[in-house]
Length: 355
Image (tube, rainbow, N blue to C red; front, side, top):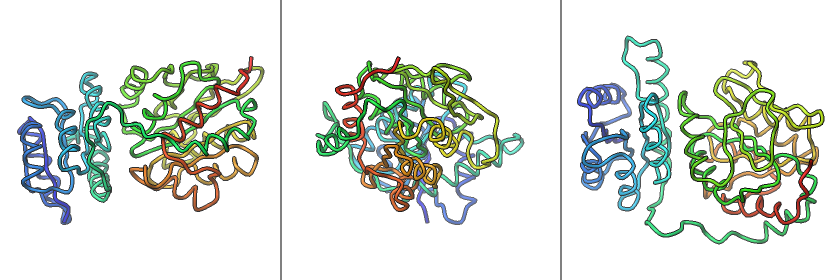
């Protein structure tokens, strides 16, 4: 049985979530809290396996509650948020900074057209997240660890003046890892960064705004036919496959290609496009996430001379996509987020900006 603690200031939502989880044979609702303060106390007393947490609540909000849970008895926290409220979305991503694993839209009622999808996604992710091992996070001035500099030395041998683009694919747990990597890169990073992040519908704009505020690079949602610029980070928009075309400049190409029914945007589609256009002058990175999206295409990128990196198992929230990349030989380097950031920063010292 997966023991669930439900936290929401709305009695209606608390009752609804309790009904949803109690109706499943593998879940047991062992506590219901109406604010973050109660959640922190119940987490220590009732020992749940996972917390389903609202964001905006009286007494103590979801961000502060998540932070305290991670400092005391760390367990997986799954944030449920109202996507229509920009303030709530911002607080949701702050909760991810504090240690929450995932953000989902609050499940819709049974009469809503999206009922089965939102409820199914909540139950599926709760089952998965309950298996994730999280560690206690004490508040310190800096969480950064000194990276292994040997990886930097290895990447220096790869003639970084030839690189034209960094591409990153990620899913579950990705926002926090992206924040950790991007926040360590210099504002004058010499090449563009193109990212596919699997994220629940309605949260991409909030994630982009959050990243843009806490990282030195310019972060934006990619637009069709937009020129890719150094020091800019482009995230694939919801409902589009993202690729590139190259004439004199590198340009974004967005398509409504649904040949891959699992993901749109798809990491595989992005890697395929950039490999066909730029190999070997590219860097491909697979970060934490479920499944295998992009792993096969990362192998082709490596075979054609591109630099390929997978996040290491120890730092992954979900060791899925990177694991497939490592086991298939797609990843030349296996690094933690700080080592990835340090290696990319090394481009500043040796790269020649392309005009």
